Figure 1 (cartoon, one colour):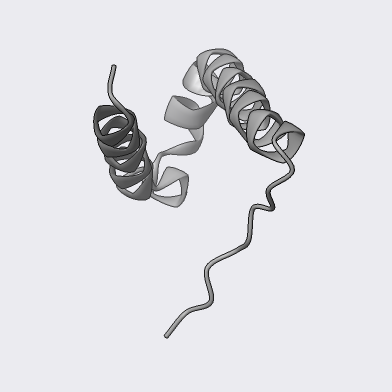
Figure 2: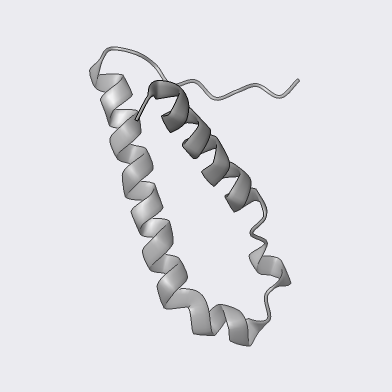
Length: 68
């Protein structure tokens, strides 16, 4: 996968996550999906940490974007 393709896929994942609003889910729906949601969020956290660690291992910093 090219660098541009990887960035595009990461950007698509961010866009998809922006559409998730658990506050709109009913308590029952959230309770029913909590195990699966937890698994997905933990896997996402691990994947993001791996990518960030790879960047830092190359001596670069990851900086938070400052809103305009």
